[in-house]
Image 1 (cartoon, rainbow, N blue to C red):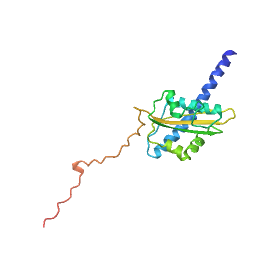
Image 2: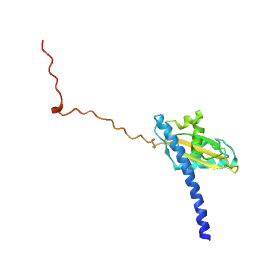
Image 3: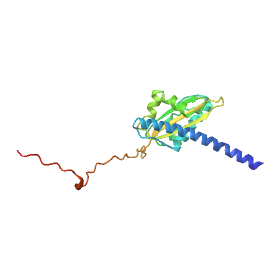
Image 4: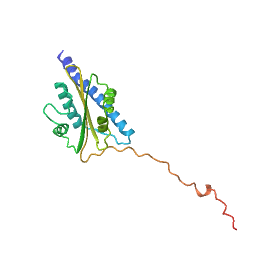
Length: 181
């Protein structure tokens, strides 16, 4: 019986982590689709930013407060640096909602001009997204967008354009010379 119980206990966090990852990935995919539509390169998921986003979401859920300032007085860039991310520029989007619907969370951010501006800022090359559930059932989301030295945004695959090659000489039509006057 103890083996079954320990398997169940171990499986629950794994399923939760997979659910968190699928919601976070869906949000990142939507951000990258919007960036592509705007002619911008995508942002790369970064594990350190994910951890910093998770820490802030967990903090907001624990305190029931939607705020850019952590309960310890920290700003987003301080939390990024404490997690080990040495940013050159960055931003934080936060929100609260009663579900983990990625499309709904994305629309909530996208319909807010300052949050949309963060998501479409060409200066950012990496992203971290996470959420946490409060005791009252509310979900607190954090999206961190940033750049650091030495990391460039992904470049789109080159598009091959057709090249015009003249036909072989034997297939070329020759024009008759102009008449002489």
